[in-house]
Length: 226
Image 1: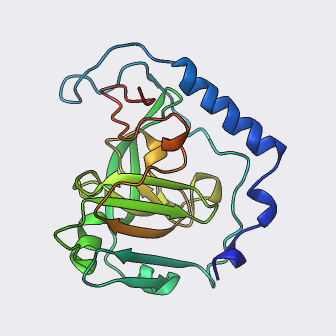
Image 2 (image 1 turned 180 degrees about the vertical axis):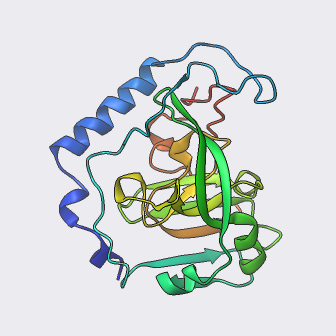
């Protein structure tokens, strides 16, 4: 069913490939690196970042066409209770509010974003990860992938967001559902998420195999792989 949610023409093409090459070049050049580190306890703005008031739209020129009647979120892998949720079943889960900052690897940060969605802590209580699960993999409706240590996914203010600033997430910002893991660079917070898999061994995702850091801590300025 997944292919019904995607426009196949959005997966490839000259514009998309040009943007991918450009970002790989940034990684190879170490673009934007300052060589500084900081701690969130002492500096709200990570090294090399600038505060913005808007929310810039960053993608590869490909936004999937998702029909909520066909939308599904699958949670599988090393969990006791694997699930596949349609939109109504997801909406029936407990929803919470959270406020956090965004730090994009392209050097902008936006403070005090108000989110609504399902807290990761509530999701974990529902699916019950197995003891051997140490990492989480995300797959999106545009075929994007990324990876996280389970410990980073399980922080108190991480959530699967459906709303931003009181309004449903627009498609350009990852709607209808995106991951929000605010302590890492925002490419780790996958847009248009459709599958969450709990695994024992790490598996680098789309940008991680193209020169970007496997972890992505903004205060350590983990923009690119060494």
